[in-house]
Image 1 (cartoon, rainbow, N blue to C red):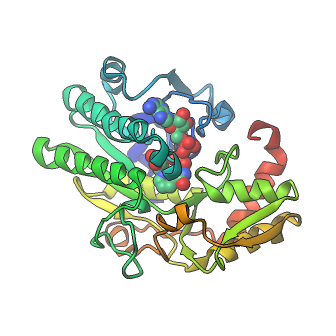
Image 2: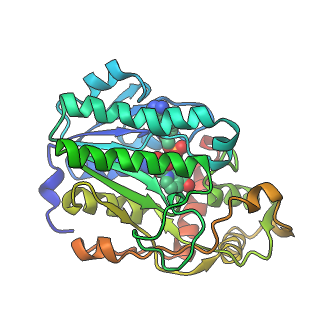
Length: 329
Ligand SMILES: NC(=O)c1ccc[n+]([C@@H]2O[C@H](COP(=O)([O-])OP(=O)(O)OC[C@H]3O[C@@H](n4cnc5c(N)ncnc54)[C@H](O)[C@@H]3O)[C@@H](O)[C@H]2O)c1
């Protein structure tokens, strides 16, 4: 990777940094010579896991805290060159049952970090982990950033709200913010405790336990499954080259069906079975239709290209969980 000195001695904050994406990025940034601070509330049913940070625990600063705590965030953002604001309520299912928590975390929480940064780190590069869920029902694929945004979940609505905050702070206050729309991520470090988000992880667990994996409908719905190392590399590249106030898709450009993903897991694990059931009504209402990202925009400003295919990524993931099962179950 060119320009690797970019991160050397940079002061970096990652909120939600004990979780899947944040901890994976933290490991890479430590390697690149950054001084990494992680802030995470360590809510029990989220992906925060001290084991994710074990390989770098002596090389980072860890703060247990909540992004909604303005006083704390005022202190934590001070002196930071780069801020990755990854803390979130992530389950679109829970966002329906508990909309105020979703708004509190994904709206107010992010506004709090932006307000703290405006006062105490106005020059910081700030990256936000948004989601493909902002698009809602997909009208045309591949999906470009200009595709209409009509989210089908409160999670998607609040992610879109946060994107607008980031854009507003760039336009109005000249802050250096970039949003990244992530498709379906998977890989080592993903939470495996429940199926409310990060479905690939849950299916790997089901297969490893020899259980049934439930597929809604015929499993022909297409998704864009992006391996964690490729996500980390995209964030690294967009930190360097992303244009302030902009939003970028990332994705594989591979059309993979839901059934194809399940087959890859079953083949790699060697146990577990598929079960097809009709779409439950509650899920059908939120189904977006086939999704594959158009990644032309990021490719125009970086050399980023995903490099890990689904089969290889699942193999690495399964090997990791076979070795470290007791840390995640
Ligand atoms: N996992 C997915 O399917 C997916 C898909 C698209 C986008 N994203 C986005 O990527 C980001 C990271 O997701 P992840 O997969 O790493 O999830 P994760 O659950 O592994 O990590 C999220 C972390 O945020 C922490 N957190 C939550 N609320 C917090 C708060 N108020 N203050 C401080 N910490 C808090 C949790 O304790 C957890 O460690 C999120 O913004 C999410 O919306 C995730």
